[in-house]
Amino acid sequence: MSRDKLYFLMLSFGHFLDHFLTLIFATVAALTLYRDWGVSYAELLIYATPGFFAFGLFSLPAGWLADKWSRDGMIGVFFVGIGLASIGTSFSETPLQMGIGLFAIGMFAAIYHPVGLAIVTTRWRDTGMRIATVGVWGNLGVASAALTTGFFIDNGGWKLAFVVPGVISIGLGLVYVAMRWESITQTSTNTEPSVPVQTSQEAYSYKALLIRISIIVFMTTAVSSIIFQATTFALPKIFDERMQNLAINITNTMANVLGTGDGNVATIVGLLAFITFAVASMAQLVVGKSLDKYGPRRIFLVVAAIQLTFFSIISGLTDGLALIVSFGFMIGVFGQVPINDYMIGKTASGKYRARIYGIRYVVSFSVLAASLPIISIVYENWGFDTLFKILAAAAALIILIVYMLPKQLPEPAAVQAPAE
Image (cartoon, rainbow, N blue to C red):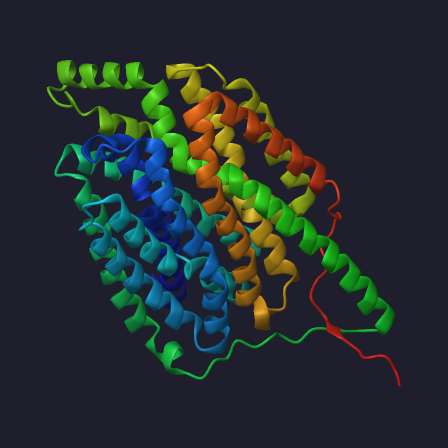
């Protein structure tokens, strides 16, 4: 494997671990902690909220440090820091201690998106496909969190679900630092590529269009973050409630045919969530290829329409039908993920790109954090059917906002000052 391919693979591993480690608690809370600690699922969600605020809040300083110091250096800090935080979280004995551990995980997790995506969009040309590929790795992290956590709950306990990936992350971090040591120790070279000079009139027109696109990016970021959080965080609990009969039938079949699997319902629920996440994540590759060919407006409208359709029909469904419809709305949710990152990568100045991604993820993960109490309240009082109706309305709002996007994105360009 070439050094360049290995570099991209390590960045992809980073995105995998970023989402994996931040979502271990979602499955732990859904499948075991509410029993072990005698705390309801809705109450446990509150203790995850500070971690997701940290996930957003620290994105901006992470992007700033990366632009000022070293993007590769910050990725090294991410790998080692989030691994240590995950191991520390495994020692939690109370919800408060768990909340503190999740905050530390969120703080280091905040590094990846503004820094990793700035590296990807600056170093490689095929932006849409590269972002989509890295995005698939992130979604596989989401999927694997449910699968492996369910396995560890049945085979060794939930604490191992934090320890094992934490150790792996530290190991990968040491490999990454060794591989990129020359880049890390160099003076920052995050410079903006040379671009054509615009006239004053062109510059004013460009700025107006850029402001319009920026507003759309941040508005859709906020709304889509609610959808992403509600689906990725709550899906293990949704499956636990709505697919118990399916999971029990699968475990019984495994026990009868293979002589294994009896009693491993948590593993099967995690497996169903993993399959749903993993298959749906492939939509990002289609979206990434389509973004480079058709641009973001048309693709954005398609994936939002998919979300609206499947959120509208899932209410009341259980077992096999619920699983099929879940595939549908997760294809729309994951398909949407690379679009805003693509637009930022195409329009933002390379010199400040990590900071701009930082602002985007402050918005995104702050909304993710704020969504948890909303999910908790809606679930506690009305159940998941009401949550699905809210998500359908959010998808409809995204469609209305995206109609304001231009058909083509402006490229960043140098501005010629008006003549004195």
